[in-house]
Length: 399
Image 1: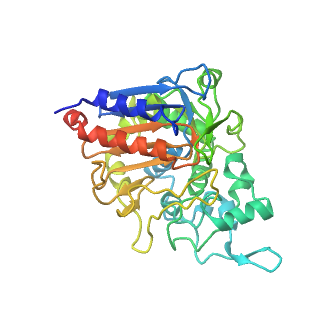
Image 2: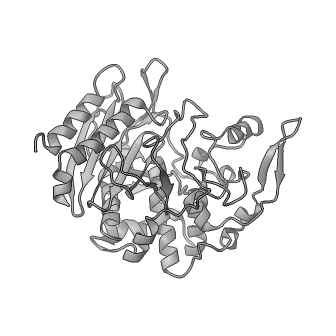
Image 3: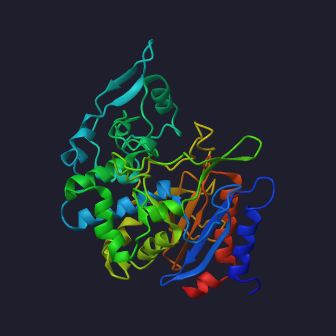
């Protein structure tokens, strides 16, 4: 069989923390249905710092928060408290006030009109509601620059009240949809999103090292976010942190956690919704959730890096057809890494990446803390890491 999983992955991690365009540190793990089969950590939490990166290092996991919020939404459906196809304004009236941006007038004021149809929670889960992000959309960036539209990283209510970029259901665009889906959950449960997650997802999965607000223990193990400069060098950004007491628990990006905790969440999806300490979702919910939910006219596209300091142009598996489910990206064709068609996964802004292969019964997570998104060293390392998981055969053997 040749090289084994541990030595292959250790080599990849070692490679990305050396050389000119290195990353400061990385934590990466692979799990089968029952336990982690690889855990690795190399480098340091902050460039030039004295703290080594360790497997219990805490990361801002950004958009890898989304699938956890999606799970909380699906639980509301299972409990008969949420109709995915009812207007979302039935649960969160404010979303019914959003209008469609049709352009800007001569003075730069946004031109708005009423949407052709109501946003549903299903549209939010599928990123087809008409919402975007200012780092991927030029019109939102203009609203931020000229109209003071707050960024979603402020975790404020005001940051959610953006106009729609198109009529709900018209196409796919990645954006603040899951933040609104989190508001639907809060409305239904009558509790803050973090509390709902703790009771209904984290407790049955035994996840403790994960939260919207850092505990003192988590803060002591926090990795620093770094900026990749044009010359390839890195600048630590120790102040680049989400608000310690956020006004809104942002379901799209707000969680901090250690990677071992996220592996427990991945295992739940590998095990048809079951956790070690109780069921999180029904098997039939999981099976329905991981199927493509997009219609023929809704296509997953490349993410254009509109704010170069936050994101490069980024896309998984260019040239391959991809779709979206509740709430992950689906690769509709076999990927060059070995990931089979129908697997699910996604990523977080500071170059964190994961995949879940339910067919073969394993998945993995790769965590760095670097901006902009799509960092060639980190993203390239992640692709090699995932490829190694399939190439060594051990992960398949474990399945």
